Image 1 (cartoon, helix red, strand yellow):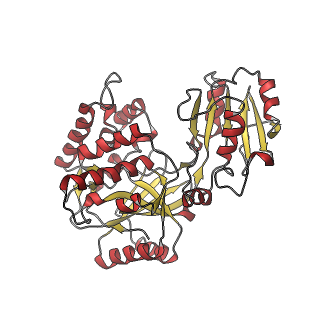
Image 2 (cartoon, helix red, strand yellow):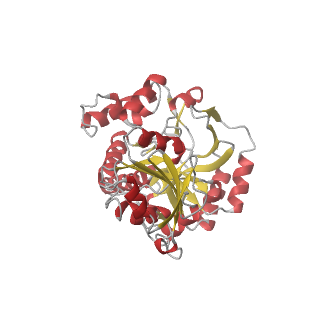
Image 3 (spheres, rainbow, N blue to C red):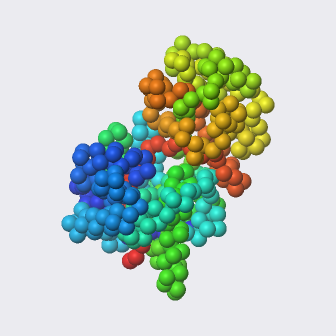
Length: 415
């Protein structure tokens, strides 16, 4: 069963919340972050992505980059832009996008739950990205990016959170993507105790939906501080990491699509013929979005195609082999296009479903890419089944929207 705790959140001053709270650090590059700086000088991206304060010729992993983030962070506190709550609290965070609402609970999640796999993972992490977040957190002694966790719904928790959100939110703003963000603070000791008891008794596991590198880095930083201090009670802030827990029935996974630079020496005709061994292929008159599992769409030579995987390409009794990302990886990317490692091969790129099919056709029509593939999204049940079996998904399998704002609530690692 999972362990959660309240903490004294550091938050933007109420009148500045919509200006400071930013996109996560990993959804844009440095150039895009600099554009955000121009649009909003108080964006938390200055702190979460400090390399964007420098020219491209500066190494993003240089000491001065992390120190710059710490310097700006301290200025935000000194100037009163960020204010710490006096009492330990949990926070209800609700988002509305395109009429769909998801409501989670912002808490400290136990690093011991991470280490003992009570917090389930479904992706490998990259040491370089992990180390970047470790240095970021250790330099600032803070966690500012929430780890997006999910759990199988519990009626008693749903009812309690629904009751708490009947009051007007403490914070409410609409961002540049027209997503509404609302925040409530819970500081009543009796309610906090009840939430902790419910999660301890009713929630066997939580699952990382988004934030594998942040959670791994947070756990390792907490362990580093434990080792440095020698003596600790287990209740100090560094024993927990900033997370937001959502019931799985409220979440929606979007497709995470692929674009490839070439056809591995094949003509378009020969490429389509090669695919016919594993797929039923039908040309479409307009952009086509997959309607079910084991179905794909492909954009090639200015035309859209529907691809239906033949039964021998998947195994619905196997959590990994049932995934469409596995089918495409094995039957197209590896077998036909010669892409063995999607993490390292420069011929492939990944496009979040939030960008739509137009982004796929645009990148092919521009000549940058040769072919694009769109998926039917992975389901939450598939994700949890894989994690429960201690399996790892292929890279770039899931895309969650809306993204959690960075800097909305911050966990300081020392009281």
